[in-house]
Length: 88
Image 1: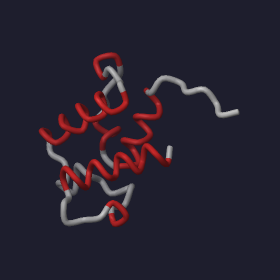
Image 2: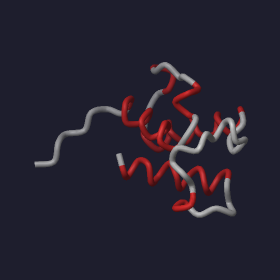
Image 3: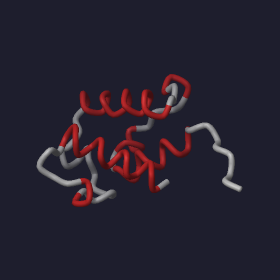
């Protein structure tokens, strides 16, 4: 999941926190309660997940808690992504 977290963190910073570096963004910061992401921003995050990870969000349960933090978004992506073969 580290690559997913890095990508999510980078996206959130680029789209919503331009004055913060990805390293400064706490992966557990509540993005919704802190006002980093609003309802329109949430739609942007979902669209980014769909295009970046080829996930059809119409086919999964979208719980707002899955988008509260970088860590939660990463866990959501990992849980709904198609299984990847283990590296040999």
